Image (cartoon, one colour):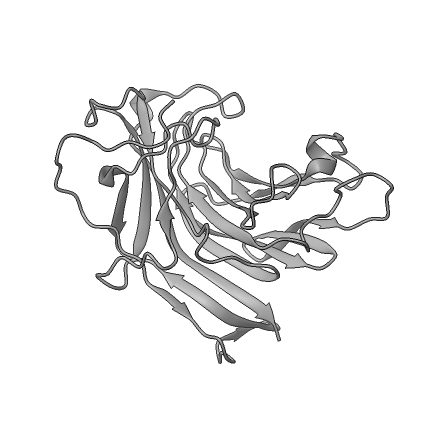
Length: 269
């Protein structure tokens, strides 16, 4: 499978814009013991800020096998970044039947500790698999470096999955000591807030400010149980389609959209 591609047809589409604000000093926007350090309000300026974000390239895994840099999978609407899943009818040089959009901060902005929250609205579709997650930004191989799944939603579910992956869970199959994932209720028709708190000895997952699951560091003689204090992590936000977990895609439900209102990153006061 090609890793990246360019459409050979020129199409006029809305430009994709990002607005990122950072503050290396104290920030007066405080919320429940947290100080806001970085905020991304999509669609607030008319300038693409490549300092923080890149489009996710095509890969060979189930989650990225339809990723594209085609502008038609990206837009701004009403202050939202809109990531789309489409039937591929516009890029004849690409053999993929579907194309999807996704962005990440890889190599540009990473997090070691603190709380990150994303407000998003997920459209319903059979085979839709939107995700918000984190991977190591220092070259650590999967699953040794860990994976933090802040949100995965399947089809038209009224729940979202939040999961911790590592060598301990994936290679040694230690799924329940401690429990590595859970689900929480969402409003399937509206916006929801998805969060993770990264601490030295725990990951705490929340949906709409409600704690769903805490994954702690434990004492064990087994390898790779809690690598999350050892690496910086970048953020991925992507519209995915199909795969063994989510099931088959129904073309009649496409296009499907994932709207991202904002991203906020906090440190403890």
